[in-house]
Length: 444
Image (cartoon, rainbow, N blue to C red):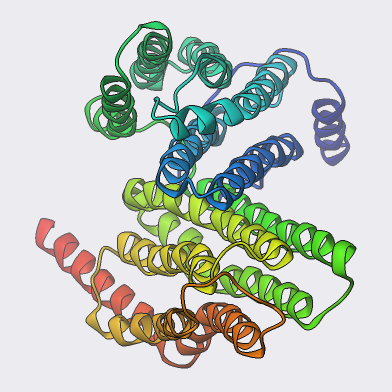
């Protein structure tokens, strides 16, 4: 009867979503699994990543490289930071009742509103204005204001964590007011850009300061690791989608060709290689053991998300350049090399942030992973400054060679780690455990 009663209660929770108290989750131990609502939420944000990458590819293709990168960084930060804030909350208080679901869906609406503001943001950046615009800010506010309600709900139900919950709600409210002011005040472009940089940095510092002063919110380290890894995984799926879209447009115009095959293969290898290398970082296992390491690891994902989406933009640029023959081999190569290099570097930086260790023995592996990128640039430089000409065997060979070399970067990283790199991680963990045991023994 006891088992039947427990089963019936679980079934009732699955079927009935009336209001429930937002009690804190279990902070320690294994993480709970992501919910279907969280996965739906992630898909909306990956669409925003894809839209930003598409704008980046378009503007770089038009020759507006600097302004496009600036607008892209701003967009990726806004999307990623809103996602991180909700994931932080849902890891601590995700009760899946009706109000929680509605407020989560409202945040998804905000993400879509922000997407509609992206073209304006990029166009403003190209004309020398601030990428900030009212439509983007409205979307960002809609993405964040529901969290104020949720943190206050949590404060009401969870007396133990009331101070940190209220602090988060106040911090978000102040930040959204300031973001609105950056969009409506008639400030010069330089002043607005400076203001949004300072405000973004303040937003990232606030959680560290608040949790140090008022105590840790009851987020679960294992759940946090899973949430970040799932968004990374879905973002890598966008690279595959970008590959399919780019190759489809290319083959639709000219039919299948060797360049289409190389681009399709390289896109898939890049996505698979970065999937493999990212999950070589033992995030869940280490964070469950040492939850205090989460903040540096968390912030390392901001450039990771941006780099993954930018790889998709690079593939779009390559396909369009092959089709129109407007860009040089070097320009096409740089569109791929830069985000791939950033992603490769962030794998090593994220490992170091998580392990709280700088292991010099990783440097040869990091250097080896960059060798194909350096070779790709050398090949591209040797192709000259003329636009790519597919009728020229030399130009075509240089382009295809550069694309293949870029795709080899994560392959070298994965092979090197599987052969020797994993030993470095085990060695660092052993050293950390010994130090922790020594500290514990000394405190007795």
